[in-house]
Amino acid sequence: MVRKRLLDRDEAEQIAIRALAFLVQDPDRLTRFLDLTGLRPQTLRTAAREPQFLTRVLDHVAEQDELLINVAADQELAPERIAAAQALLARGHAPTLG
Image 1: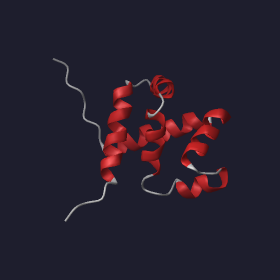
Image 2: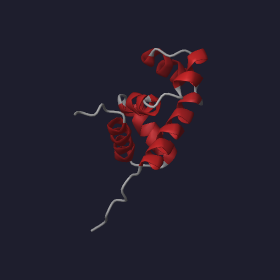
Image 3: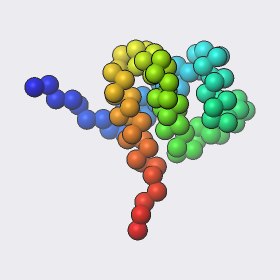
Image 4: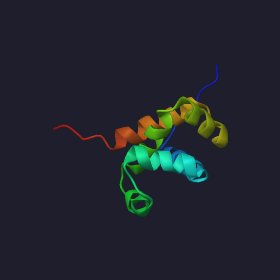
């Protein structure tokens, strides 16, 4: 039985950063990301400082099967690993109750 290595927050953030780098490499992919997130090139740097930004990057990637597959191939990861990173980062920014 093969055990999957658990994903930690640092690795999840690195996956998101590499996904952003993948988006930035192609002007059409970057423009689509900016358009769908409501960001602009001049606000991207500021937005990147926000805690939920990396989650937004992976949300964007996960919403499009072809993009997810391409990002996964670029990082030599299974798409499920990117989904796990997305979930881990999203949990880290969910409001707490109580």
